[in-house]
Length: 378
Image 1 (cartoon, rainbow, N blue to C red):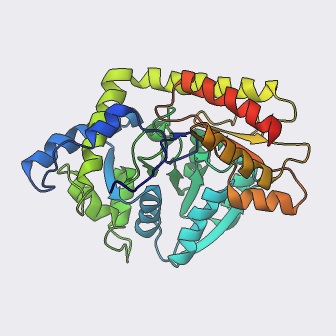
Image 2 (cartoon, rainbow, N blue to C red; image 1 turned 90 degrees about the vertical axis):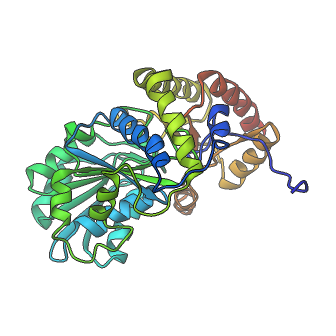
């Protein structure tokens, strides 16, 4: 329709994220039948490159879930938490809370260990909760998108394993932007998605599922259909999805993952994200009244949460968002529920800088220069 007036904005939010031109063009590649031989031409490389990016071997099965990262996370709950088990949901923010909500609404025996937003998982508190609740399964967030906090997933999974429980990890906003140590950590299932650090449109949840988890799932009742990792894995072994995939996204994913692994290179991609994190941190340090929200040693490589001061308000941040829109950007004025809670407590709100996927240091430099000027008058 010629009447549509869609803005062409550079996305500096925390997902969906910026798409490079080659990914957009890949959306024009031919459609295909998902049970035809053409399907394997796409999905064999997709599955193989995902395993390279995740650095997992044959002990893990990659599964693509139609939907989002939440689809994979809910499948981990439905398939891996037995009726008689307790699931301990560890949260450092909104998306850790979401994992807990999934467990509750699916009727699981769920308890929550909750830390204040801006904090990382405290291992001593975790070990105390493990001893108290004796869970069979523990969920945790690798990279909390609402606060910019990255947890030490190796240490967390090690504590969970030592307690005889199975660790399920939400890695939605970090996978593709930093090394994730899925196999080294011993995560039973690691869930992520396409629309953040992979630099792709939304549409697939991604699960890396250990063989031991698949063996356990076979004995868990009421796994559902699309949330059944056993059925999903059987399709994935044939380089297929359980249900009809978004073929346009599959084309884009095949092209993008080939670029990440064989074009830019995995280590170069991770280094670029580290460079942009350093740029964002240096910019924050140079601005009066701004500071980093996440604690030292737990600051995300893919997004930065910035604490304001001096009477900055949610309303002023929303005003800044519109001023940045006029300059051709989509600015992130912070996670809504968290900022509301902060203002209700008389605290200053946050905003977030997404520097993930295919955003370049040059793009980030220009964005931050414009943001500096906008915040002066917001």
